Length: 363
Image (tube, rainbow, N blue to C red):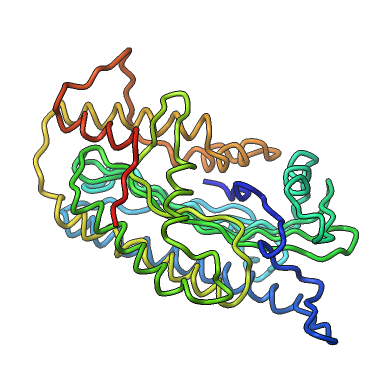
């Protein structure tokens, strides 16, 4: 699960934070060092949070009688003894397989420094830039990024798959027009059978979180409704005319500052508390072979989305010498495709499909 460029790569006025300077009346206040501190603080938080999440999930597995634990795969700066070299890139991929609850899951931390924008990526940013901003993004401009991403594929079709990520992306234009930086992230559920109370609980957690930060002027993009709509829009398979799951929250281009950093940390802290209670309620639910087969069919859709539409996968595979295992680590462990599969009328499978075709409001 690599770091992905934000969806719109929007650089419109008010959508980014500039490092060069901020004008306030007659004075110009330099903010470069403070925003760099935001980047470093967020990267450090993500690495610590990854370790915390791993420990929490392993406790859940142990309590369910499983001895499955996460493997650890490192690269770059985290591979040797030079982790103190803050100028280097690297990553830590943690994977659990064959658990009692999680059939396959991955939690990946990625830190990129000193990258250079390709012509296509630079054009994507520059093409959406507000002309009044005066930021000139070009091929070869340096960028840095940090991200924590997670996908947890459950063994039981009664427990939804959980996906989440948070990220920061920073670009330094070579013409000195001012470095730009923004946050992105979110979380969502992909159920196989609908338990409405579970989905409502998950969305209520997100709604309450957004309400806590929605009145902050420096977090003026925090809005549950718009983030829910963005999630439904992003996780959509146009060839199938259906959404991948029941959504959650999704956002890009959030200005990077101390206040938005606090929101991003709260988003990340909310991940497991919004999902663990669902596990607790459904972990002992029985299911049939037919229901397991339906889960595998829906996982096929999950993989279709990853391969055809997911920007993170595309970004990772376009990188020189990509770590393919790391890029594809979010894929389900087992999937199924059945030619022209038809769901039974008035079944629970049909009820799910109706909502995947036409998302509803859960809060």
